[in-house]
Picture 1 (cartoon, rainbow, N blue to C red):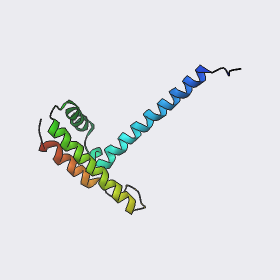
Picture 2 (cartoon, rainbow, N blue to C red):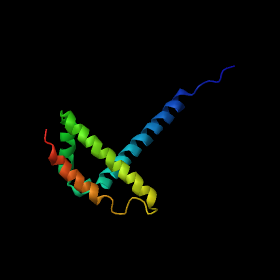
Picture 3 (cartoon, rainbow, N blue to C red):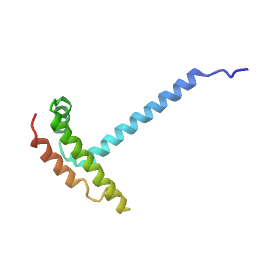
Picture 4 (cartoon, rainbow, N blue to C red):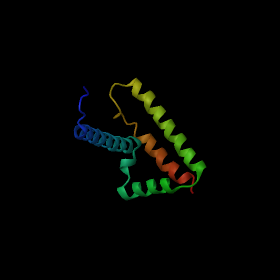
Amino acid sequence: MRKVRDYDAELKALEEKARGLKARRVEQLGQLVTATGADALDVEMLAGVLLDAVASQNAETKEAWRAKGSAFFQRRGRKGGRTSSGNDDGTGTQPGADLASGSGAAPD
């Protein structure tokens, strides 16, 4: 005889998992803002930069941003492997400077 499935319990478990994944994503985005030094920008400026990036139609500019982001994560991966103190060793200062220079270097 088949076991009866509790669809309500399964749905509740899936909703809880979705909430957890959303919370994790929000936390990771906050960590990214902090790690890049973008937390030094005021909220309006950061929102404007992100809106311009989303609206940008320039494929070359987007590819340059992607490459810069990839290099950022590769640098952080190497630095994280060498130190046991974590990510609070001042690594956010340099990438923040890159972010500021990169946002005005290639206008749409």
